[in-house]
Amino acid sequence: MNRKLDRLRDILGGLENALIAYSGGVDSVFLAKVSREILGDRVIALTALSPSYPSYELEATKDLARTIGLRHLVVETRELENENYRANRGDRCYFCKSELYEVCWQKAKELGIETILNGTHQDDLGDIRTGLKAAHEQHIRSHLLEA
Image (cartoon, rainbow, N blue to C red):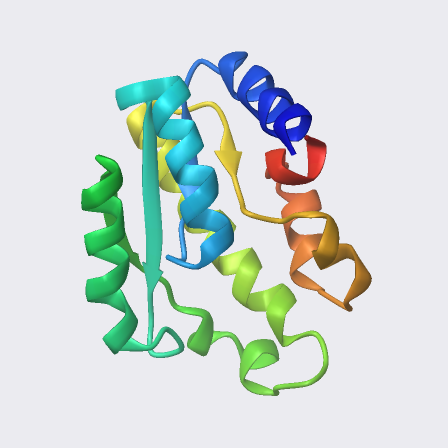
C-alpha cells in the first residue's frame, strides 16, 4: 500500500494544479485528501449538482471538503436535457460523465487549471462503466489507477 501511496504522491507532485471531479464518495475524497496534502491550495474540488445527484448527500460532501481544507465548487449540470441520458439505456453513465467533464473543463479553463482528476481506480475496470469512455475522450486523469 505504501508504494502505491508514494507513487500517487509522486504523480500528484508533478502537477501544476488540479480540479477533482468530487462526488463525495470514498474514492474522490481519498484522492482529494492526498491531492490537498501535495498541492495545497492548487487543488479544487467540483461537485456536479443536478436532479440525478441526491440532495441529502450534498451537505455531507461539503462537510468533507471543508474538513480536508479544500476549495469546493458546486456547479449545476444538465444531463437530464440530453435525450440519450433520459433514454436510460445501458450507456447512461457515458452521457452523465460527458456532461460532468464538460462542466469541469469549463470551470478549469476559467480558473487556469490544467488537469482534471477523477477517482477511478483498479476495481472500476472490472465493471462495465461507460463513463470511463467519457473520461478517456475528455482527457481526464485517473491518478488512483495510474498509481
